[in-house]
Length: 300
Image (cartoon, rainbow, N blue to C red; front, side, top):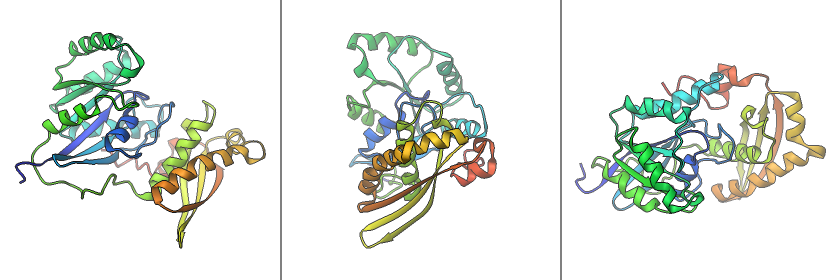
């Protein structure tokens, strides 16, 4: 055991759109988890790794905790709640408000059942006056006994160094789990699929994104070029037309937005080919969920 080095696991939980993925990307200093202003952006537990001279934090970014409507929803809920048992510290992200809604009440009930220490992270402090943060802290402190309360802005990076110090305080001493160059355990193909899905989420109408997945059909390298063929899967024929767009314009837009970030990650030129397929009710099919990387048996 290393008596000076800390290493352990921290999970980020919270309602959809509270900024979990943005915060994790900010803490690790690299884009690992996709972000958008639409619910259900994060579907898997994503591991990202922060390493410094003091210690190593393995972050689990979980799907937003929401009541499930289909098998994909059930999978996401189990993925989020399952991490509460497996980590050294829980980061619960909330917004700087004194209103505690049904979503937060549900999370409070889950947190009351765990013995794992909880850091309350009040995110989006850049959206309110400084004095408005204190009433939010008081409101939440009445609900649960927190190990720490840390106000941050994931978007601006405010107070994130303090948050890192607080997390390290609650981790056990020990050797790092990953070497210092590792920032995620996600396979390249999965990150590429997620980057494409992010650009689709950001470009498409409100009603479509929940029902899309991205499958990487092939990924081949030649010299300094990666040839990637990917399919965007949607649930309805009408959605397929919207995703392709007039004269293929929307599909081109999604591809041209995704390509630079994929090139940045792979450190080479990318030739990206996108297709669209309809798979009705894929979110309720165990076979298709498994096919798209969401294994219903994983988060037990």
